Length: 360
Image (cartoon, one colour):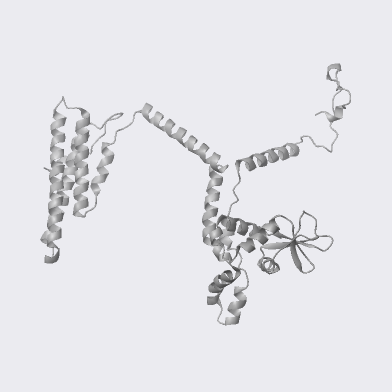
């Protein structure tokens, strides 16, 4: 074989199988690469130490056998190209076999598998009609997949991506909050708008706006969450302090819900985890203990990267509200303004019991 066999770049036939000339050239190039790999294996044997000679000789013989097979398929490709009775599929099969043997020879010899680049030259080129049909099928499949995802999650792709990134954030940051399930319950009580502080006690009222009685809530956890600014106070007229989640607290609560395994099993375990985090920042033992009793804030990176996902229903409702707001901003119907109406014709007179001003 000569190196001139691969001097011409193979060309694929437009709109069908690769041309016979392309198959011949690719097969011959594959044989050249296979022989080169076998030669490299033989050179390794010549330069090897006595301890590795046996293994390298086995590699050399295996690579040589692959090279022989690659050359045989390259020769058969040339013969099939000259035979007008031979189908094009047989020609293409021989060329592909030559490439496969070349890749195997390079892999066996432990050299770069450059022969894999030859596969692309044997790929069938689609016609314009076939390509359009393929793209149409792809779009249909993507639409079906999107419909299934929406049915399962009630969210579009963008919001599903937000949810996935939020889960990733939760896995990396919930444990660092030093929370237990009890802290989550306090935050959920605050989220309901019924958590209040009065007379030194913390309770969750039975009804919104009723600041008398209700279920008792851990004062220690509430104080810790408030000190870390996960909770904010809204004072009522009667002096009752209602506790609600701060913006940082809202995000921290959502992350904790997304990754419950990140919560600590007990207050003691949470304290020990916080102690391990702060011990390097303080030299004195008392300072370490004091710092461990304080809940750390949510890292700004997590707070900044979190994006609340919205369901399709929520997006639809928000779009309706925005459309209504735009309509009023642009001079639409305003309930407090008297809208003049032209005099009604006899056929337009309202039914008895209804006045014109109630008709829009």
